[in-house]
Length: 169
Image 1: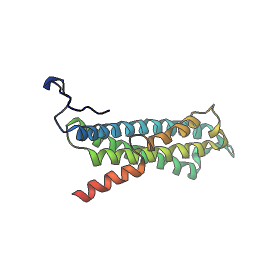
Image 2 (image 1 turned 135 degrees about the horizontal axis):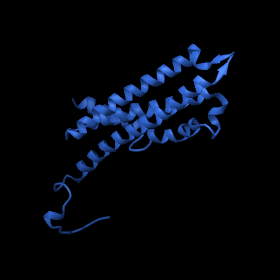
Image 3 (image 1 turned 45 degrees about the horizontal axis):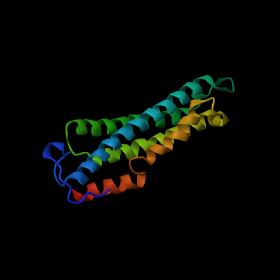
Image 4 (image 1 turned 90 degrees about the vertical axis):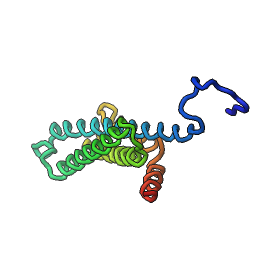
């Protein structure tokens, strides 16, 4: 949409004159924090389902949660969730304070979304063949979580944004 010779009363303008592009980039920064938070929610849901299942599912007369390989998966999942939360809290706190968060929001979104995909994948693995059955919640997490690595800019774009910010300093 183009507006040629369009006049607008000052009180009807959104933002400052000639700063529309910058404002749109700031909106993306906030959106990335939101996608990071969404990723954490899905990751937490997949983790909770996997933890619960691992305590109930038995092999060789004991819960699979007692096997070291399953414990390692659960630990890695929990660490990724906590790290995602911390990155997202940092970006959200800075955003709330009115600071520029281009690098921080991209880092939070990149890490949290990729961690969520990894966590959903491991949750399916812990469930074994049941992980693909719609009766178990990990199937939906696994199917839905990939969108988080795409929305508000792909992981490749996040890396580009972060690299530009790092090289600019």
